Amino acid sequence: MEARLLKNARIFVEISCRTKADESVLILTKLRDPNGRRWKYSRALASAAVELGAMPMVVDLAHYTSTPHHRDRRALSPLKAAIESADVVIADSLNYADILGDPDMHDLSLTAEQRRIYLQSNGMEEWEITPEEVAAIRKRTLWLLDLLDSSEEVHVSSAAGTDFSFGLGQGANWLPILGIAPLYGEVAVIPQHGSESGVFVVDGPTQMKVRTEDELDRDPLRITIEAGRVKEISGDPVQVQRLKEFIASGDPPAEVIDEVGIVTTSIKANDKYWWRDGTHHHDTVHIALGNNQRRDTLVHGLRHMDGEVCRPTISVDGLVIVEDGVFLDDVIDEKSK
Image 1: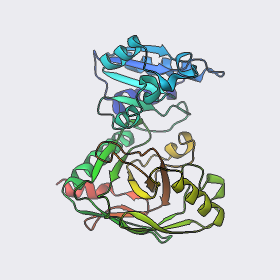
Image 2: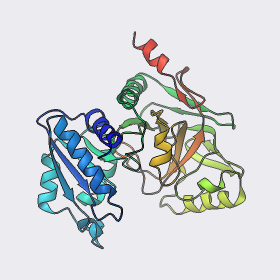
Image 3: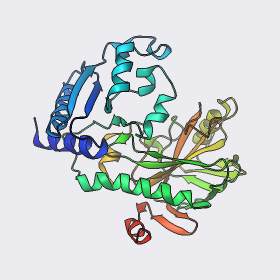
Image 4: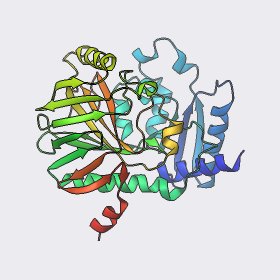
């Protein structure tokens, strides 16, 4: 196996999954892969686990996850038992909600608190990453969580015209997103409902095919928010219409601020190798419209659309933590003294 693939697998298993000696590592994948990449990646992950003194097992779910109605049923009992008993679970191109037959498991796995991790495997043999920059994602994420615990307001601005604020008071929530690894990380903030106000300018792509990667040369979406709800939308007429249709598709309408995702990765390979919808770039913040009715426990409503604000500047109670899309690690070091 290629040296770089083995090195990157070791970084993921050791740094992102925090695997220790004598722990069990369950690798869930679909080995029915025309080019054989999944098998190659699974072998690399298993080798990395063995190097750490852990005990890996690879499970092929190709047939199980291709069953037509798998979304409507619970996981097979032996599979569920294996997932619940393993110290570390790695899902390569699979969704925990589908595997376990529980739609909540997607959001719950994103935090990585139970060390159920989504592997960003695309191009794993090509990444040029270091343990230090992967470890920095966790450091920034946990530091920001602590900062938000003692803060009251977040402000987001950008050169494109974003001027958006929200509160961290009653009903607000913030969660670590460390379960999409090893290239990505964020803090997903559910603002205090009704505190959100101002304008955010989506000059990057969105989810839900409202503003796609190949349409970024069009006028950006300019969304005005009052008391947490969409007040006005302008921009490219076609994209504006799509956004209005998305909002109307929710019951209730997907017109509230579901989430503000403050990105904590600085790894450029994240942009190239993972996000199939062209979103979640390392130098952006995403602000999501949706209709989340369970804000105390989940990030995503039944209808949820991230929209990227490129190269933002973000401040928490006046302290600038991201400037022009770059997370300011010096601020972490200074505040930690």
